[in-house]
Length: 420
Image 1 (cartoon, rainbow, N blue to C red):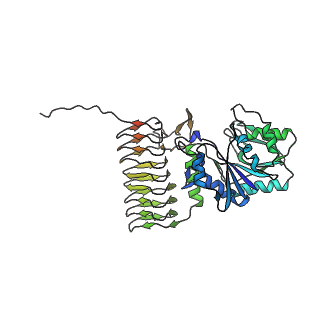
Image 2: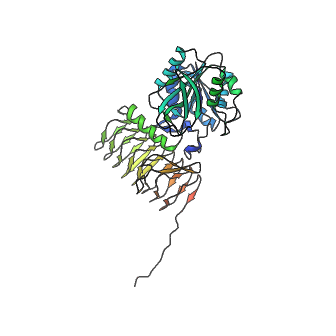
Image 3: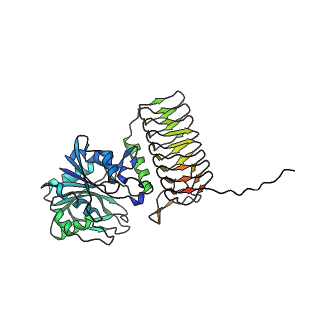
């Protein structure tokens, strides 16, 4: 069986973290999202077909031509937007057998695909999709069912409970004929859910499988923090491969990669994951649900809490990083602080595609892109975004989002008085 992974999207809602890479390459717990998808599909497929477009060269270079011995084929998405067009892109690579199609920006576990396959094989269905029950379907497609079969897929029905579409499907090759007859949606996209509705109207049987495990649709920056916490809490194994100096305190589970040095005075409360060849300490505090990538530097008098620090980034002196995401190759100047809590204790709102969205989180710090530098004594308000390749000068208070490739400088008014 072949597994088709949809990985062509730009990830606009995840900017600035997707300024220079596909969203499936963003790392959570020091592993790219696409790696989790491949890992959990691996037992069920013989070949991976990855649908690409945005920054495709970076993804192709990252993965190569095989994954753990199984071939990986890259196919550029055909003209047009939407999941139906993405799946249709694989038409020349699908023979006369059923195939899996999965969104590349979701996290699921193997039980989901196992259940989907079992449900399909027990029935005489033409397609199958994975669903999960939620109390509020405001942000999901609702799956209306009748017995074992899907009756209809409805887009975002509002604050009602029911089954949500999770973005994992099993199709027979005949789905391509229905995609060819699928009309453009109101959003200007060709939706696979519309294709499924078309199949049902034509008398095709679409079955569903209920998934009860953990699932995350990684569409917004705080979803990365949610997933990071889940993985560290449920899948981290205590492993020390680096050097831990006398005088450092480590409370398991903590994973420390090869070549990493943890200096005296460091206090780490797991679950925490630290990559390879990083420098930690001396005298810093790393709190639970923090992941720190490869070749990072967390230095003296720094506190990190519930955050993602990507590869080659530094918080070297007198920093507080709470509930934040810092992209690759970024550096925080001495005294840079991320605020993560409003004085009124209300949820943090974040600007997403020009509109403020409620993150649902009372604590949320900064979302900092790649190749960002901050000067000394920079203060960043909760939920603010700093675009990639920007420089924040000394003493700046970041109370608004900063676009990519921007220089922000604080001007001082000085009064010079002669002493009598």
